[in-house]
Image 1 (cartoon, one colour):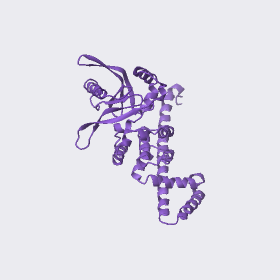
Image 2: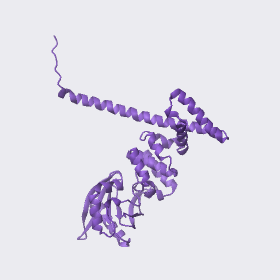
Image 3: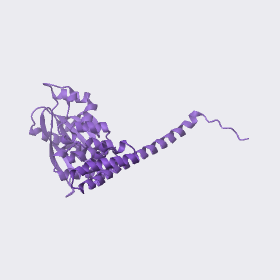
Image 4: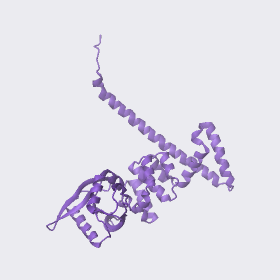
Length: 328
């Protein structure tokens, strides 16, 4: 008679945990694939109907074809998914995003609801920006909504560039996961969470930002990590202190923040250039990019030195970005 084996629950739990992980991971992959295929199906349905409508000069034909197609598909596949309103959204989807090469890589990262959320946006580059960033940074629908409500695209440095350059940077992010500083930095930053009003000092602003560090990082954006406050730098035998030092994980750069209130002065730029050179000499690790400076203040603009890589030729160029803040 075979020996009976008494398996204790605590002995089998590691096995069960591993099995749960396998099952959950598989289900998640299946859900992602199903979501992607459904979204692509909606695009192709919309694109095909749009072709049919465009092929007929009568405006009334478009309305009739939507109702007719909706009734036919509902009778075969169910009511909700192919309602006239949903059919029109599919047509709008294909019309607003006519390039399937842009849609295809996004559908594996985003839900149909993400696409619906950006459809009311009139600027096609803004729509492309929000979807590309949502996919790259894994934004939930709620996060995407908050970014749109906060006019994130309109505040980014990239929004001031020519259309072709914006498209190029978004394509690089989608296809090669290359995130540029212009996609990260914005103007203005909203610092109302500090609660500061009226007259206050630079130290009060710094204290408030540190006290609300989580909210400050959320406003700065994804990828920022706090490094140090009042970073001491010894330059030519003198002590200098940088207000706030951050690191951006995806840019692989130190981000220096020096708080200045009032009107911008030329000496601020020179001072920050000095800080940048010190950070690059003493803090930059192998493989990291050169440091970037952010200046902040109350209702003023400050010039930021930014290091970017040029494609032609392969060298680095120093240029400036003007960023302003208003925390009242």
